[in-house]
Amino acid sequence: MPKFLIQATYTSEGAKGLLKDGASSRRAAVDQVVTGLGGEVESMYFAFGESDTVIVVDFPDAVSMAAVSLAVKASGALQTRATPLLTLDEVDEATRREVTFRAPGR
Image (cartoon, rainbow, N blue to C red; front, side, top):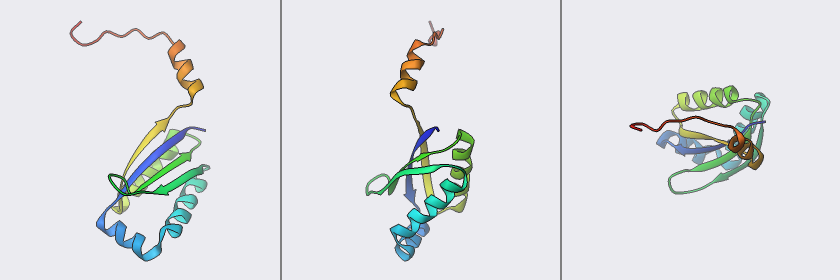
């Protein structure tokens, strides 16, 4: 399954919800959403700095990740960034593919 790194920052309303419900409640909500689309949460951490939470998930496909991203952003409670994660084997396979590319202006 494709793996994604999700970095999220709470809005002020989202932070109020976190303070009210607690971190364990948020983890349960993440688990419910991800497993409901056939995925799995590998890890979830809370942080401070640019991101308030960092999550690694496996989804059946990129469309599932996009669906979650849209729903979460539409809530207004979080700003999120999702980054596809590649295995070493996937990158090795990519390096073996021939790509013809002309840089701009060359």
